[in-house]
Length: 127
Image 1 (cartoon, rainbow, N blue to C red):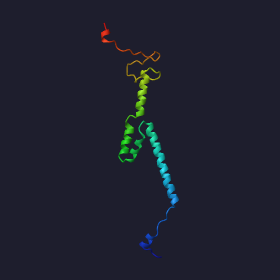
Image 2: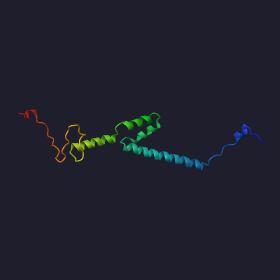
Image 3: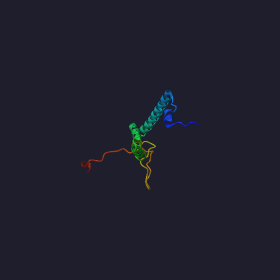
Image 4: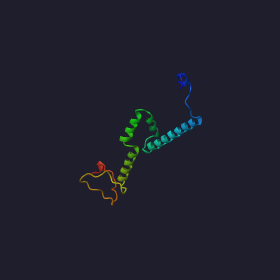
């Protein structure tokens, strides 16, 4: 049995992949990354934020900040929904009650028309 020297071992190169396979793998990874980036942008935009927030995932500490922001802050879409529900309740739209009632409060009667707002009387008109 003949022992090969280090120089002979380093002269032999490991088997290489064909160029077409390497190109196919790179194209697959680019398509995979683009697909997931597109999905993340759609999710962030549905939450009411700009799609550019997805770039924070590439920043080492920024991704944790983004996660905490999305987890604990009120989303813009929730803020809009709360506003619209309050508006619907204020205009007397059926099915939308104002804020939940506390103990001892009576619920509003939705069978009646909403009260009509009138400005307070002017101080000179009081007699």
